[in-house]
Image (cartoon, rainbow, N blue to C red):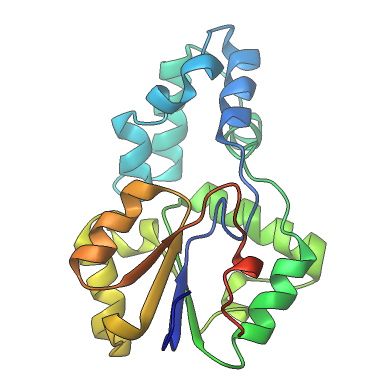
Length: 207
């Protein structure tokens, strides 16, 4: 489908790692008694979540805001578990695919995430594959909270292009959130919206 591609930039959640955002809001419901899961997409747009994704607030500050938002007084570990409930498994077939693809193309990771989630999915990776970090699968893994920027801002894609001297016309960005493709397209990247009917294994990237 995408010809003459020599570089692929992958999103993480919903593309490589299975993701269920509603699970976190169900966990918040159990802690707080508030009805949150039904309108989880709206709640997930709260400004403090985005601030945390760009490193604008610390993990301790995030937890304190979360406590106030939920009107609860839960310990850090309980909040972290609820916040990370959205993170699913990492299928071995995707790990194997990325290892093989990395032999033929430059591959990068670009994820809107945060410090608590990074610690959680590193543990998922360790438990399921024995690898200590996603950096072992990619030429480089980029995380929004470490960059101070987030998708879909065009600047975050431009950072990868400039840092690695990528040719946008030969670089494919894959994300399961359509909004995130817009900024990538603005800087000239090829894009693929990964819907539920698709998988990174079925895009013909190894053909």
